[in-house]
Length: 213
DNA sequence: AGTAGGATAATCT
DNA sequence: GATTATCCTACTG
View 1 (cartoon, rainbow, N blue to C red):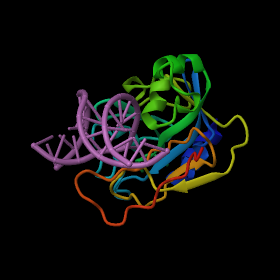
View 2: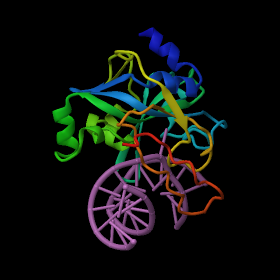
View 3: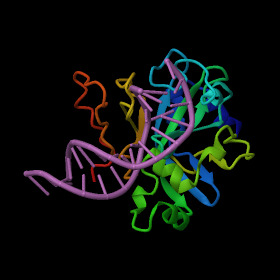
View 4: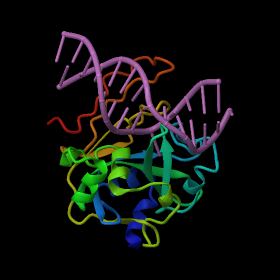
């Protein structure tokens, strides 16, 4: 709805909060989002792919909100972002985790038969694998039904939201722009391992408490 | 249970 | 040629 676009047009951290609980569908699989990360635009956020300006890869980020920015990382994995804020800002929200609420059988076939239900979409690349999202979704609209992936508002009320540092980023790691639904077992629990090249100073003590099961 | 290391290729300098 | 918004496996205690 236009209401969703309105919320996605807000500053990235607020748009990220609005995305929690939303339903992402691709094919016959639907995921309810439980964990997201906000990324600012040009010059505002050193962790953002758009920080250094437009490139062929991040061009989608400079367009209007509600479009998918899908990128390939570590030679293996796809990650899904939702472009937010008005056109030209180049802000986006990384979809990090969710719960598979529809098409569980298909998701499990893609992820592996032995994978636990809570792990089906627990992590950015796991989520895209469960949904079958790849390069084909890059640059398509998530809100007008024209693309392979659809974003819909929450079906019911969303619970309490917690926030903390983002995972796996170097610059801007201290910005608490990671948001998740408190106590949800599908929130990723990966510990932000130290960067390979340089050892930062006191970067310890920021272990998120997503699912202390 | 917790951690360390490797896989593997597009993108940008 | 270096870097990377990750995940899986294997190893240690």
